[in-house]
Image 1: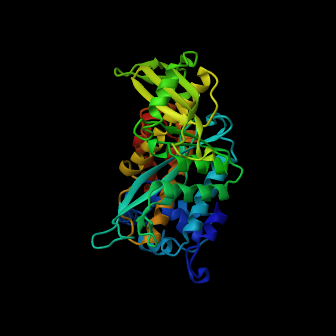
Image 2: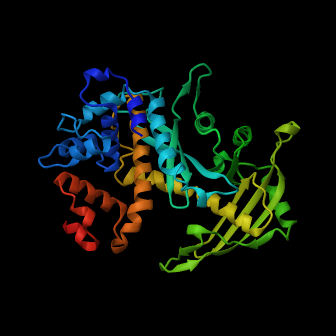
Image 3: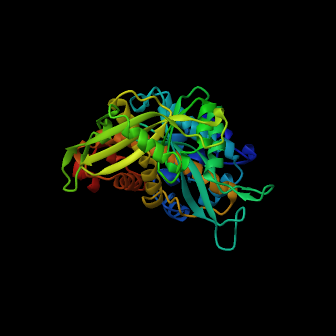
Length: 421
C-alpha cells in the first residue's frame, strides 16, 4: 500500500518534510481512531509523551525521519486539495485487493461463484453556509461495499452531486451507478460480481449494465416499481405449487434473536418462479428480460415478507433460500452508513469545504472503515473472548487513549483489566 500512497501526490516532494504516505496514514488515522473532527486530533496528536507520532513513523516505515510531530489538520486539508481523486481511489482499491481479495477471505460469502457487491447512496457533509457546489448544498455519494460472510468492506464510491450543464439535468443514483460500474470493470476486469440493491435498482438500466459486464444481480422487488409485472408475478407464483419449500437460510440468518433476546432458529417459507417477463409493452425482443422472482416469508423469530428479482437460476428451495439471504444482506450497507454517521467517523461533519478535498477525505473515511473491519472482524474479535460485551467504539477509544499515553500495555491485558491499563 505504500506505493499507492506514494503516487498520491500533487506537490514538489523534494521541498516537503512529510512524504505522501505519512500524510495519507495521518488522514487515515483521523478516521481510524474516530477523532470526530480535525480540531480534536490537533489538540491531542502532539501531547507530551504521546506515542502517536512514533506509531505514524512505524506504520509508514519512516523511523529514521527527522520530524518529531505529526502533521496538522490544515496541512492535511491542503494536501487533500491537491491529490488527484483517481490516485485516492486507487489507494482504496489496493487496500481491498491486498487485504481481502488476495487473502481469499471472500470464498464463504459467494453465490454461484460471484462476490456480493451492495450499492447504496448516502448523504455526506453539507457545504458550509453561503457556499454551493454544482447548485447544491448537500453532498451525496454512491458507495459500493463487498458483503463478506464476516462483514462489509467498502471498495469504491461515486459522487452523485455532479450536474450535466449541457442537458441542464441533475445527477441521480442510476447515472452514478453506470459510472461506478465502468470504473469497477476497468479496475477488476476478472472479478465476478453479483450486485445487491434496493427496489430503485430493479430497473432496466441495471439489467443492461450487469448483462454488459457479465455480472449477476439481486434486487428488491416491489409492486410500485413494476406495476405491470407485479400482478403477473403473483399469478405465476400461484400456478407453481411445486416451487415452494422451507426457508432455510445460512450464516448469520440461520439463528436470530426474538423479542425476549433468546436465540431461535429461523423458520419460514419460500416461493419462486422462473421466466417472469420484465419487458414493457412495445419493447423490442432484445430489450425484454425473463427473470426469476423469489418470495421469502419468514415467520419466526421476527416476521418478514419480501420479494427479490434476480437473473440467477433457481431450481430448489435451498437455492431460493440462498438468494433471499443474499438479498436481505443489503441491509449491511445501511448499518455501515449509520456507523459512519453516529459512531465516531463523522460522516456528516464538514472536515473541509473544498470540493476535491472533501471527496479525498471521504475516500480515506472508507479506507479507515475497511481497515477497521478487517482488523476487528478477523483479528480483534477472536482475541476479545474475555470481553465480549466491549463494543467497537470502546475498543477504538481505548487504543487511541493508549497511543496518547505513550503506553503499549493494552496489548497484554485481558478482560475488565483493560479499562484500568
